[in-house]
Length: 139
Image (cartoon, rainbow, N blue to C red):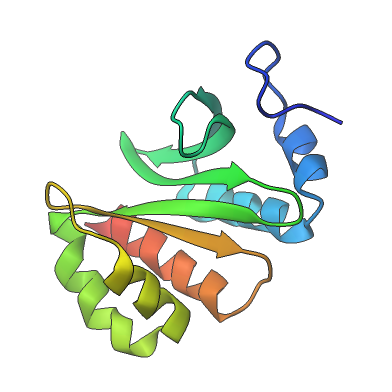
């Protein structure tokens, strides 16, 4: 088993997937790869909130999302900036209560909200996440 806190060895995507132990992780990665024709970048973060290895997806220099692996689930961060704010707020009434609560409870800082979504299943929150990524990419 890999140690995601150890900076000495960069894990592969497959090793991270094995660590998470949830098929939804790899499904999301493959979906982002194919939809946006981009490749993930595995990076080590020294940030005290989410220290360890994470998976970032970028397209045309723009961050689409960052995935923080956990055991049996993962957290996805999507930044909602000024360009995305109106689009996200327009779609919120159609979203899950869970996403609306996350959005409402995430403080805006420097014109951005850093939404952190815990994903365990390919459910409505998963679909909301895909919509957020699409807005992020389009704006």
